[in-house]
Structures are given as C-alpha cells and as structure tokens.
Length: 359
Ligand SMILES: [Mn+2]
Image (cartoon, rainbow, N blue to C red; front, top):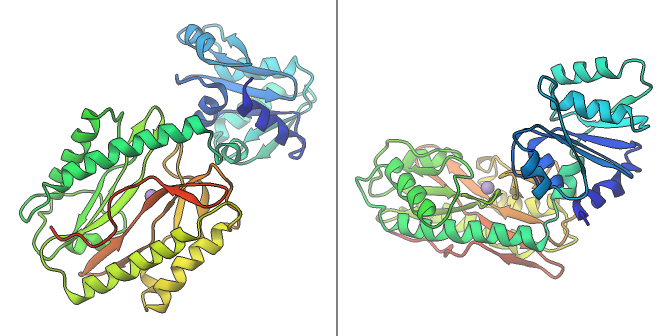
C-alpha cells in the first residue's frame, strides 16, 4: 500500500478537488517512488495514473506503487496523455500545483480541457505538506547523508590554516564526501572567512584564509535523493573580544531554541526564542534571516522556522536550527544543527562541537 498516496487522498476532500495533477519533480518522485525524470501523474480518490514514455516504462513498472502506468506514445507529451486520462475518468474539479506549473503549460491544459466540463483549481504546497513529516526510512537516509557529510567536514577542517584558499577547503570537503558515498552537493559549499563571513551566503571563493579570521563553513550533501545541512564557525588564530562576544551570543541563541524543539511547539515561537536572545544582546538587526527550515528531498522545504510561519511541529519533521550574526568587516557567526522532531523532544543529527574551536 502506498501510504504517501493515501495521505494525499486524505487531503483531497478538504481542498474540494476530485484529483490533483502533480507536475513538480520532487513531488512526483515522492508520491510514486520513481527515481527517473520525465513523468507526470495524477491522484484521484479511487485512481492514480502515472504517465511516462518508452525510455522509463520498465523502470516505472519496477518502482511505482499503486498507480496505473501509462506509456505516452511518441510525439505526444506526458502532460497531454495525463489530461486525456483525466477527461476519461469523470473528474470534475482538477487541482494543479500552481507554484510548479508554468503559465505556458497552464494555458495548454486549459485548451485541452475546453468544453470537457472539468474545472481547473489552483492549489499550493499540497504534496509539500505531506512531505514535511518523514517516515523512518526517510529519516535514515537523511541520517546517512549527515554522517557522510560530518566525516568529510572533519577531514576538511584539519586543512584549515592561514594561507589556504576558501575554495581549496570546499573542494577537500566535497572530495571527502564523494569518497564516503555522497552523491552530490546539497548546495554550493559555503566557506566564508574574515570579512566574507559577514555574508550569510558567502559561497567559497579564492580568498585566502588568514590568522584572525572567523570562518563560516556551511555544508551539505545528497544521498539517495535526501539532503544534509550543517554549519559551524571556526576561528583561525586568536579571537578578538568582539569575535568571542558574537560567537557566544549565537551559541546561546542556538542552544536555547534547540532546547525547545519538540512536537507541538510553534515554528514562529522557536524563531522568536533565538531572535529575542540576539536582539537583547544588541544584534537583532544583524540576524536578518529566519531560524531554520525543513530538510528532505529538497534542501529548503517546509516547515520554515520563521516569524512568517505559524505551524506546530510534528514528530518526524526534520528541521535546521541556525541563528547567525553578520557584521561588516568583522565577519559573522552561524551555528546550525539538523534535528529530528520527536514526540518528547528531538534528536540532533549533527555531531560536531559548538564550542569555539581555534585552529
Ligand atoms: Mn540550512
């Protein structure tokens, strides 16, 4: 039984649609189990249809569960075949992923549906909401991605010294991750040193690391489609009082927010815990991003731990907790853990110390 499809079916009624047309790549793969690329699917209350073409039919027969597999003939697009099968199925209200369907394709669908008595209904983040709560299989894949990533990080860390370039450190991390089974990067590795540590997303550059630099190292990989995400900030040489001060504030904000992560806690409230600590210390305006985000098939997915999102955490969600302070010239600090939400609290996956490490 395909539980993911079942969860989606449970939501169709409240959305007032008979079926959902799924065009987003990660959503298609998530619902069907298919790991290839070209396909479209739709899920109705009684029926689910998966459309691919000759190149993928055999793979789909092996991977796709509880869906009728349709092979689109050469010269006809997947989307059109999917719409044809919808027309034949008696569906009246068809939901589509408005955030993942291009205007061009929307217009095409409208044309194909003309006079067929089917209403197109715009919906958003329906499958994404199902994806937020991970199964134990998914959590194990994220754990594995994280293990590989942490080991690669600890190797790369040993090479940080004055004179080496940020990009060299990033490459060492990336190579070490591949050697251990990593299947690509979750995002461009951030190694941001000195003044560049003040750039929240300072992707590794040719800048040489020097003594007196804080180094923000934000890294993650992919493993069987799932992502890992971690940040540590290292000190090269002797820290200044200001560097120690901002490090300690971020560390405290991270620890206090992390402590409160458990099922039933509001995402907005968690962000507030960290924000209050940083603001009271006088650095509120230098923490210009939200506290964290969900991690799964996508590196940034729901739930967002942010002022703009009021949602209660549920067991099985996997989120980051990553406050930061970013200053001009002096640089910045971010500390990020990847955690699994449980009924009674949370499990931290990222393992490296959060004390200030001076290299
Ligand atoms: Mn992150």
